[in-house]
Image (tube, rainbow, N blue to C red; front, side, top):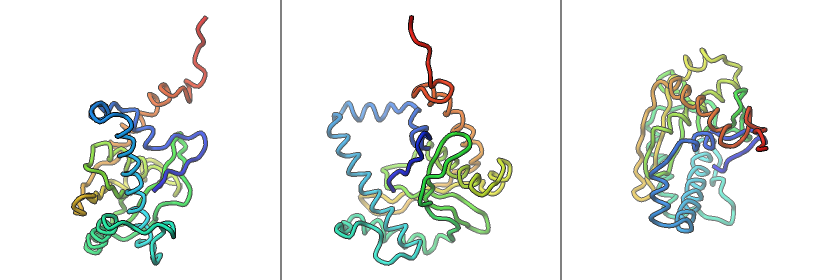
Amino acid sequence: MPHKHVDGYPSVTEIINVLDKPGLCMWYGKLGTAECNKIKNESAKFGTNVHSLIEAFLTGQPGGVLPVDEMPTTEEMACFTSFQQWYSTSGLSPICMEPEDAVKSKLGFQGTWDFIGRKDGTILVADWKTSNQLYDTVGLQLAAYAQLYGESQGWDSERIWRTIPNGLAVRIDKKTAKVYTKWYEGLKFYFDVFQALLLPFQFVHHTGAWEKPDKED
């Protein structure tokens, strides 16, 4: 879904993007900025539309929540149908879907989760992906969403990680519409890494303690 922002708070994705991505640089170098940006925009629109269909399905909204003048493409519907089939046997039950507004953390970041639910009696955080593959940084993302949800419930750190120990990423392949899943266990350790990224993010973007850098003489 499109990012929802609280002014002055960086998003989970923006903070994670402080990490170096050599593969992304090589991709831009190979195809060129214009072509890569075009592909990214098309992929973002595809992902947004599939997310909208999934959200409508999980919240019981008939007909989806896409703009009325935009029908889902055949590929988007194929991904959505595969998700429906997977979800029906997943054993998941929803607790809280994507919040209407971005949730901000006392630690200085914001974000919106896709899904907080239960499986086998344990609470988990899940994220729906239409990317080509899943990266380890997805674990950082899931951990940050678990922190945001826990704070919204008034939980302290110990309770958050005791209650939401693991996260689940569900990837729907755009070409084949096949569903792949990956568990990220021990979200507390992923969150330790995410939290450590806050300082370099502030350094790079001149925010927080670095908001007023020393001026040259």
